[in-house]
Amino acid sequence: MTDSPKSSRALYADNEGNFVVQEFPLPEPRDDELLIQVLYSGVNPSDFKTLKFFNCRNRVLGNEFCGKVLDSPALERLPFWPGDIVAGYVDGDKNRPLRYGTHQEYISVPPAWVYKIPYILPPPNAATLTIVTQTANDALFNRFGLPTPYEVTGPTEGTLVVWGAATSVGMAAVQLARASRVSVIIATASPKRHDFLKTLGATHCFDYSDEHVGDKIKAVIDRAGGGPIWGFDAVGSVDSPDSQTLLLRSLPQREKVRLVTVLLMGHDGFEPCVGARHLEICFDLPGGGQIAIHPNLEEANGMRKALDWVVIHYGRGFQETPVRVFRGSAKDALKEVEKVETPGMFGKLALELPWAATE
Image (cartoon, rainbow, N blue to C red; front, side):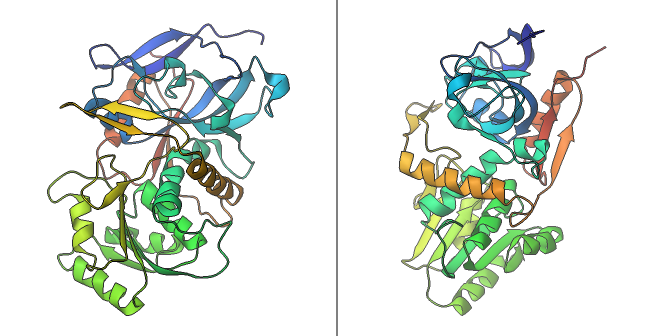
């Protein structure tokens, strides 16, 4: 590689837990890793939330990206070449190497986490697609056991209730449920999002702030008959009453009710969903103990097939959802990432790299 850069500027949680801009040496690919120039990095609420809750230190922020392949020690053995535009996501474990964090100008990651993007998938959208899609894939196809778009052969009888359907994970879940031909898809969101959610596949939309929302959802479920009910908390709020409680209040008490939340620590009866099942993920809890999610390659392979379906059908079966691109300095990018921590943003945020120079 000619004219190699010497360093990579990163959004970083330092040894005291402060979020700062830090410059690191250019990462060196290990074994068969790919050295990638990050073009766009996807922002998620967990970028700040997870680090604060689990007190993570010495960590480059960011978990998903779109970039350009530059080099690898094993290019002759890999299906990638310098110049390929790729997307992917990285290990979210607390002790991951600095070279994995995607809110920096250059990363070095295993090729198993990377895929080439087709021309129909814009790079900013590719950078923000993987984590929300894989989280929804885990909820629908692993935790609920719904057929993937590749497997479905007829209507999937049952009712899916997505609490927080206008979140990015919620919008992905609605679209994937439509692709899996779920017969009833109920979405809760603010009224201004209802028409858009119906274009994604929601059959019924309700205002989550309506004091009668629970009764309205139960009425739709009753009319649907006695099939299975899948309740998905796509918000993960912890305010009182939290989103899991609000969802549970809106569902009838039946044996065939399955519950999933995007929170790693759910209420009784809720299973957590995550964006990766091929990795070992461990975090120490603030009061002692540990959360550990062990790899399940069968589930991971199913999620990857569903992700491949989304990438292939992007814009032609899986509808584009809003993405805002931030262009500016690394210092200002930190402020934008912090804003995403607070619920309420519609769509995803992508950071354009390299960072703009500061005066």
